[in-house]
Amino acid sequence: MSQARLKIEVARAALKYVEDGMLLGVGTGSTVNAFIDELGSSGIRLAGAVSSSDETTERLKKIGVSVRDLNHTGDLELYIDGADEVDEHKRLIKGGGGALTREKIIAAASRKFVCIVDESKCMPILGEFPLPVEVIPMARALVARKLTGMGGRPELREDFVTDNGNLVLDVRNLDFVDPVARETEINQIPGVVTCGLFARRGADVVLVAGEGGIRTL
Image (cartoon, rainbow, N blue to C red):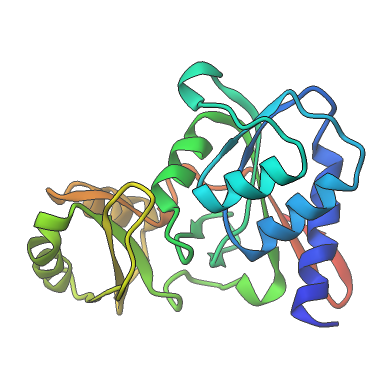
Protein backbone atom coordinates (compact mmCIF):
# COMPACT_ATOMS: atom_id res chain seq x y z
CA MET A 1 0.00 0.00 0.00
CA SER A 2 1.37 3.44 -0.90
CA GLN A 3 2.23 5.99 1.77
CA ALA A 4 -0.48 8.29 0.38
CA ARG A 5 -3.03 5.52 0.82
CA LEU A 6 -1.87 4.84 4.39
CA LYS A 7 -2.37 8.52 5.21
CA ILE A 8 -5.94 8.37 3.94
CA GLU A 9 -6.65 5.22 5.96
CA VAL A 10 -5.35 6.67 9.22
CA ALA A 11 -7.16 9.96 8.54
CA ARG A 12 -10.42 8.03 8.24
CA ALA A 13 -9.68 6.14 11.46
CA ALA A 14 -9.32 9.46 13.32
CA LEU A 15 -12.86 10.49 12.38
CA LYS A 16 -14.30 8.11 15.01
CA TYR A 17 -12.97 10.50 17.68
CA VAL A 18 -14.71 13.52 16.14
CA GLU A 19 -18.31 14.34 17.10
CA ASP A 20 -20.88 16.80 15.81
CA GLY A 21 -20.70 20.13 17.61
CA MET A 22 -17.06 19.75 18.71
CA LEU A 23 -14.49 22.49 18.90
CA LEU A 24 -11.56 20.75 17.25
CA GLY A 25 -7.85 21.53 17.19
CA VAL A 26 -6.25 20.73 13.83
CA GLY A 27 -2.54 20.38 13.10
CA THR A 28 -0.44 20.76 9.97
CA GLY A 29 1.09 18.45 7.37
CA SER A 30 0.27 15.98 4.63
CA THR A 31 -1.48 13.47 6.91
CA VAL A 32 -3.57 16.25 8.43
CA ASN A 33 -4.42 17.43 4.92
CA ALA A 34 -5.81 13.94 4.27
CA PHE A 35 -7.78 14.18 7.53
CA ILE A 36 -9.30 17.53 6.51
CA ASP A 37 -10.33 16.04 3.16
CA GLU A 38 -11.99 13.10 4.92
CA LEU A 39 -13.65 15.43 7.44
CA GLY A 40 -15.10 17.46 4.58
CA SER A 41 -16.84 14.43 3.11
CA SER A 42 -17.87 12.87 6.45
CA GLY A 43 -20.99 14.92 7.15
CA ILE A 44 -19.69 15.85 10.62
CA ARG A 45 -20.62 19.42 11.55
CA LEU A 46 -18.14 21.10 13.89
CA ALA A 47 -18.84 24.07 16.14
CA GLY A 48 -15.50 25.34 14.90
CA ALA A 49 -11.79 24.59 14.76
CA VAL A 50 -8.53 26.08 15.98
CA SER A 51 -5.81 25.83 13.37
CA SER A 52 -2.05 25.47 13.83
CA SER A 53 -1.04 27.16 10.56
CA ASP A 54 -2.19 29.48 7.81
CA GLU A 55 -2.16 26.53 5.39
CA THR A 56 -4.49 24.50 7.60
CA THR A 57 -6.76 27.51 8.11
CA GLU A 58 -7.27 27.83 4.36
CA ARG A 59 -8.01 24.12 3.97
CA LEU A 60 -10.54 24.18 6.82
CA LYS A 61 -12.32 27.20 5.37
CA LYS A 62 -12.60 25.45 2.00
CA ILE A 63 -14.64 22.65 3.59
CA GLY A 64 -16.85 25.15 5.43
CA VAL A 65 -15.34 24.94 8.92
CA SER A 66 -15.33 28.13 11.00
CA VAL A 67 -11.78 28.78 12.24
CA ARG A 68 -11.67 30.26 15.76
CA ASP A 69 -9.07 32.12 17.81
CA LEU A 70 -7.86 29.98 20.72
CA ASN A 71 -8.03 33.04 22.98
CA HIS A 72 -11.81 32.98 22.59
CA THR A 73 -12.53 29.23 22.74
CA GLY A 74 -11.18 28.03 26.06
CA ASP A 75 -9.93 24.45 26.21
CA LEU A 76 -10.56 22.15 23.25
CA GLU A 77 -12.06 18.69 23.42
CA LEU A 78 -9.81 17.11 20.80
CA TYR A 79 -6.65 17.81 18.80
CA ILE A 80 -5.79 15.87 15.63
CA ASP A 81 -2.26 16.11 14.24
CA GLY A 82 0.52 14.08 12.67
CA ALA A 83 4.16 13.68 13.65
CA ASP A 84 7.59 13.22 12.11
CA GLU A 85 8.54 10.56 14.67
CA VAL A 86 6.72 8.63 17.39
CA ASP A 87 8.15 6.36 20.08
CA GLU A 88 6.41 3.58 22.02
CA HIS A 89 5.66 5.99 24.90
CA LYS A 90 3.69 8.29 22.51
CA ARG A 91 6.37 10.97 22.67
CA LEU A 92 6.85 12.82 19.40
CA ILE A 93 9.12 14.88 17.21
CA LYS A 94 7.11 17.44 15.25
CA GLY A 95 7.80 20.55 13.23
CA GLY A 96 8.87 19.28 9.84
CA GLY A 97 6.24 21.62 8.43
CA GLY A 98 7.39 24.47 10.65
CA ALA A 99 4.20 24.85 12.71
CA LEU A 100 5.64 23.40 15.93
CA THR A 101 4.91 26.34 18.25
CA ARG A 102 1.25 26.65 17.39
CA GLU A 103 0.95 22.87 17.43
CA LYS A 104 2.40 22.72 20.92
CA ILE A 105 0.05 25.47 22.13
CA ILE A 106 -3.02 23.69 20.77
CA ALA A 107 -1.87 20.35 22.21
CA ALA A 108 -1.54 21.99 25.64
CA ALA A 109 -5.06 23.42 25.33
CA SER A 110 -6.66 20.10 24.33
CA ARG A 111 -8.10 17.44 26.60
CA LYS A 112 -7.25 14.66 24.12
CA PHE A 113 -4.49 14.60 21.50
CA VAL A 114 -4.88 11.97 18.78
CA CYS A 115 -1.77 11.64 16.63
CA ILE A 116 -2.12 10.07 13.16
CA VAL A 117 0.90 8.55 11.40
CA ASP A 118 1.93 5.79 9.03
CA GLU A 119 4.24 3.06 10.33
CA SER A 120 7.38 4.67 8.84
CA LYS A 121 7.17 7.31 11.60
CA CYS A 122 7.46 4.81 14.48
CA MET A 123 10.92 4.62 16.08
CA PRO A 124 12.25 2.76 19.13
CA ILE A 125 14.17 5.92 20.12
CA LEU A 126 13.52 9.45 18.89
CA GLY A 127 16.17 11.35 17.01
CA GLU A 128 16.64 10.01 13.50
CA PHE A 129 14.55 12.93 12.23
CA PRO A 130 16.33 16.25 12.91
CA LEU A 131 14.75 18.18 15.78
CA PRO A 132 13.16 21.48 14.67
CA VAL A 133 13.77 24.42 17.02
CA GLU A 134 11.92 27.69 16.42
CA VAL A 135 14.09 30.70 17.30
CA ILE A 136 13.71 34.47 17.40
CA PRO A 137 15.84 35.78 14.49
CA MET A 138 18.30 37.84 16.58
CA ALA A 139 19.09 34.75 18.69
CA ARG A 140 19.82 32.38 15.80
CA ALA A 141 23.61 32.27 16.24
CA LEU A 142 23.44 32.19 20.05
CA VAL A 143 20.98 29.31 20.05
CA ALA A 144 23.02 27.43 17.45
CA ARG A 145 26.12 27.69 19.66
CA LYS A 146 24.20 26.43 22.71
CA LEU A 147 22.78 23.50 20.73
CA THR A 148 26.26 22.66 19.43
CA GLY A 149 27.44 22.65 23.05
CA MET A 150 24.80 20.00 23.78
CA GLY A 151 26.32 17.80 21.08
CA GLY A 152 23.87 18.81 18.35
CA ARG A 153 24.54 19.82 14.77
CA PRO A 154 22.12 22.67 13.99
CA GLU A 155 21.37 23.83 10.46
CA LEU A 156 19.29 26.86 9.54
CA ARG A 157 16.24 25.89 7.51
CA GLU A 158 16.91 27.85 4.33
CA ASP A 159 14.37 30.26 2.85
CA PHE A 160 11.85 29.53 5.58
CA VAL A 161 10.05 31.77 8.07
CA THR A 162 7.36 30.45 10.43
CA ASP A 163 3.85 31.89 10.56
CA ASN A 164 5.07 33.63 13.73
CA GLY A 165 7.87 35.42 11.83
CA ASN A 166 10.67 33.30 13.29
CA LEU A 167 13.42 30.99 11.99
CA VAL A 168 13.85 27.23 12.38
CA LEU A 169 17.04 25.37 13.23
CA ASP A 170 16.97 21.67 12.36
CA VAL A 171 19.23 19.86 14.81
CA ARG A 172 20.85 16.50 14.15
CA ASN A 173 22.99 14.32 16.40
CA LEU A 174 21.23 15.05 19.72
CA ASP A 175 20.55 12.16 22.08
CA PHE A 176 17.05 11.67 23.49
CA VAL A 177 17.69 9.16 26.26
CA ASP A 178 15.52 11.40 28.48
CA PRO A 179 13.24 13.31 26.08
CA VAL A 180 11.43 15.23 28.84
CA ALA A 181 14.68 16.58 30.27
CA ARG A 182 16.00 17.37 26.79
CA GLU A 183 12.83 19.28 25.88
CA THR A 184 13.11 21.37 29.03
CA GLU A 185 16.82 22.03 28.50
CA ILE A 186 16.36 23.28 24.94
CA ASN A 187 13.31 25.38 25.74
CA GLN A 188 15.25 27.21 28.46
CA ILE A 189 17.81 28.61 25.99
CA PRO A 190 17.15 32.36 25.63
CA GLY A 191 15.77 33.04 22.17
CA VAL A 192 14.16 29.62 21.72
CA VAL A 193 10.41 29.88 21.19
CA THR A 194 10.00 26.12 21.52
CA CYS A 195 11.45 22.89 20.18
CA GLY A 196 9.65 20.13 18.31
CA LEU A 197 9.96 17.58 21.12
CA PHE A 198 6.50 16.69 22.41
CA ALA A 199 7.59 14.70 25.46
CA ARG A 200 6.17 16.67 28.39
CA ARG A 201 2.82 16.64 26.62
CA GLY A 202 2.88 13.76 24.18
CA ALA A 203 -0.07 12.20 22.40
CA ASP A 204 -2.88 10.48 24.31
CA VAL A 205 -3.62 8.14 21.41
CA VAL A 206 -1.48 7.31 18.38
CA LEU A 207 -3.15 5.75 15.34
CA VAL A 208 -0.62 3.97 13.13
CA ALA A 209 -1.48 2.91 9.57
CA GLY A 210 0.37 -0.09 8.19
CA GLU A 211 -0.06 -2.89 5.70
CA GLY A 212 -1.99 -4.85 8.33
CA GLY A 213 -4.46 -2.07 9.06
CA ILE A 214 -4.70 0.51 11.86
CA ARG A 215 -2.85 -0.08 15.12
CA THR A 216 -3.67 1.97 18.24
CA LEU A 217 -1.08 3.00 20.84
